[in-house]
Image (cartoon, rainbow, N blue to C red):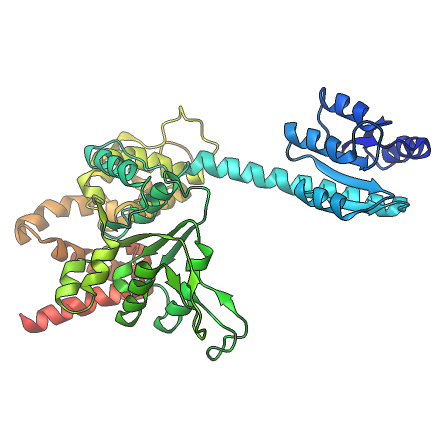
Length: 453
């Protein structure tokens, strides 16, 4: 590493000028804080080794100067006069270590190895974050179709407020991405964004997940745990598939939204939380209210502002952009100038009905990137259901069955998925991009409809 050593003791200056290079580092030795600050105005360092008490400027002054131009610079304090004030200052500037003189050279060597390891880890994290940002962007909604223009405009309108938002749309349309975009454009963007799928949690654990629990509150509660409301304090909590929330929990959620207070399971006292609620559902909440499955007062609470996401079949002009964006998750090194999909492939994608929406498209693109060894992606790299034989049968099928309702199209997609996976419901649910619970619900609803027909 490149190290700056500042100390007014000549014996230490000589020692460090000899020993630090032997440990594999380059070192600049400064006799006081003023000299060190002058050096820092010209160049940056990986690590500082500074005495606290020096003529002119203190070691804390040196650290403050270094951090102002290079915040990731690490610092180790060497001092013969430790004090509470200096310790507080060390914490303020996130000093790596605080050593009292005299210290052993082996101890310093170990600390410098720790600094080097930390800097390497920080570089890897930055590289991965940068790579992820390039691939996915910051909550970027892909598409310039008219329906997506409307969605983006609504996001920009509601994001700066604290209003509760309900995002509606079919499964796989990207409701969580819209929720994240609302959060990122809000005044809470620097605070946590916490997402929870209400349909994926066992009913007996949902309350604990949302509100937390006290140690011993129930069998298996071996330690006190904070809930997601506390985790999201100051930020946004995304309740995906809120229509799956059990009726018993709806009343408790309503109370939290009205009072801004939560109560952990097993505790009597309440905790104040500041959380913006963003909800999403693919279900028709009004029908659930009519059937007694969802509280009407809760529906009004979560639905201050509503955003309706269009299904992919209603914005097919966005499919080429979406497909290429998704493909770069798997091939991040492909130059932007390369053609990823052949024209015939794009036509095949645009002619598909997409019952699983963008989530299904992501699965299709991933499938194609696995099979394709050389660009562009051809129709033969798409899943079997995109074959010419299937495409040729579609006009005949539509001619026979005539216009189909949305529910009929949905059930057709479910039956086709079950057929593809030989009746394996978990695999069919994964193929469709829905939860297993949702698949069972839809099958049960279809069975009930057939009985009453």
